[in-house]
Image (cartoon, rainbow, N blue to C red; front, side):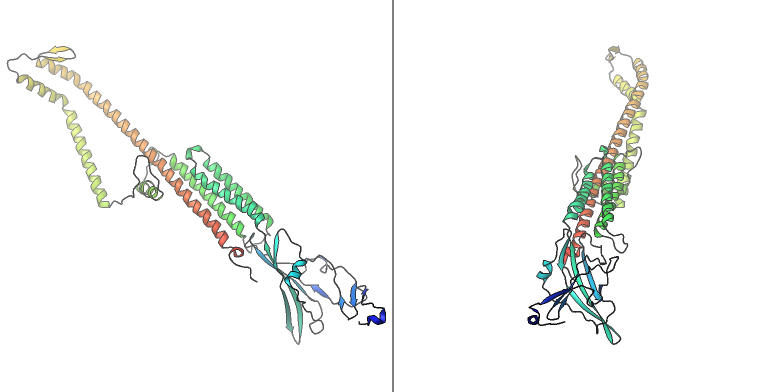
Length: 416
């Protein structure tokens, strides 16, 4: 359809209804519209040179496979696939008009959720027998904006995890350690539910933000378990539990030295290993000393008054010509027999006093041992608390840096 504008009064273009001309059956192959073709019927614009322009307006819906592995730091590639439904390439060929990126971006309406990185095109001809089928693909390279998700999801989750770590600084007797950590666990569970609401229900991949929240839940759940152990250690005593040797070596010597924790009244120094032979020698020395002390006590306790009798008799025999007098409780005594009778009378009282003093000393030693054991268990709880503080701090930092440095959109450029 060509004409000379001079012959038709200078007319260069005419408009004709869409049903008056033949139009190719070019459709969007990956359309997601219920009517398949969402184009609005418009007039044809015909130029005197024979060019026909048809630009139907419409809202195009297409299917696009979404990869949510790196959500919310994800980049998506969607495409529009156009082609003839019935005509082969020998009857109907399609061509792409090259347009600059600036010209394409001029028609792009900026979005608050996505950034348009590029719009490459691709011409695809699929051979079939002696013919071919032609398809034209228009790609959309999109990158999600992460400020919204960073401020509303990631930052609060990190603050919750830090609050959970700070919970290890609370004293066990405060009663708020487990309450704080359970509250943090429930908060992270809420964030994980929010992620599930905004992501498509697919089992092909797990979003990295969901993995981060999942790791946070594991860390928080583990911290609750460790906190229960810490509180259990704190309230132990010598009457209920006996601390094993390996626990003493680990929690009272090695870990405090590694964590730079100093007990009041004790020096911070590297613990030394003791050999089994050395331990056996020390134990045998202690047993011998105990036996010797016990023997001395028995010997000393068995003849206190007899020694007194001998001393009295010897002192009296040494004074031949002198009249000796002894005073006991203000009473003058000059007869050995009378002194012996008084000594025999006092002896049961002395034994009773000795037994009472032994009971008092044993009770004081028992209380001291119980107090020392209680303080040891308290220090074990403090050491374990400090160890968990460093352990979970490193776990949270490792999870955070793993999220950051494993995300392709942060470490690498976008590639098709």
